[in-house]
Image (cartoon, rainbow, N blue to C red):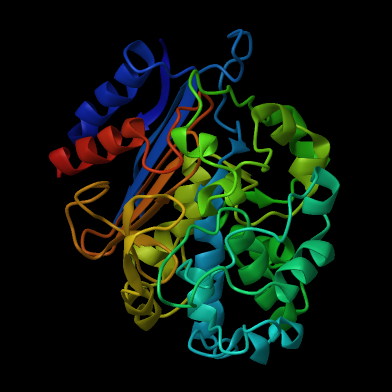
Length: 375
């Protein structure tokens, strides 16, 4: 296996761990990137873009990272609060009046970020065309009653979170979420990350490879909360390889990028709001991001999760970082992102061979731990 890219000598064992993901843990194509104090110290890639191992994974290869995309919605919401145009304590209906239906009059924006708004799924199963129709999806969410007492529990808003936060962003800025993210984050820091992919980039999108075993969470009773969220949601590699999925804006699940671009977008959060010569927000917003919102057994994931402002914080069950002032999340199949505001560290793992973890894949955890061992 030929590993390409750069890795500072002090992180040599990280490179070895990355190689072992291919030789011992089933990776086909993958990348891993780390910034420390705002500078790249690791930027590695290797393997192939396809299961047949015919197309090498290139420096500019991108792929659907599923729920790692969510961290871009958190970033944007926090940026807008920093600019004084969004109050995360305010009612969602203050920005989106139609949302004030069916007992949701007092749902706060912070509840959307912390998965505690009680809207983890749609009112019924959606087909792909409905999922790609932004206005249709948002209208469905606006008309629903919460599935539980708002703010009392978290319940992973697997797909809906992106529409909920994204519609608040659209009401404030007048721009779709993908457009605002591109103009205000990706272009400013140079992140090759897309929410709504222009077809000109299709030829460098790697193939996702389905997990050998289905995630247990996807086999739950369809009448349970978890089942209602996942049982009729088509996030298979076959469906997400379609032009419709790629071009739609689904800010909770269809971001396309690689480890380098995920890190490039999120590095400001690890460095008091500034990265690559650009200030995205002030240091006070980093502190805001770290504020605990809710913790306990998530009603959808069935895991003990500690949510801050969108991002999760480390727990013994998923130890993405040993440092308390760290933030992380991950995508179905394996991608991860971790932001450590104490160490001024940001790292991401992205791959195409999916595993059966919805969040917190062991391959990414091992790489994160290898970085901390070097530090």
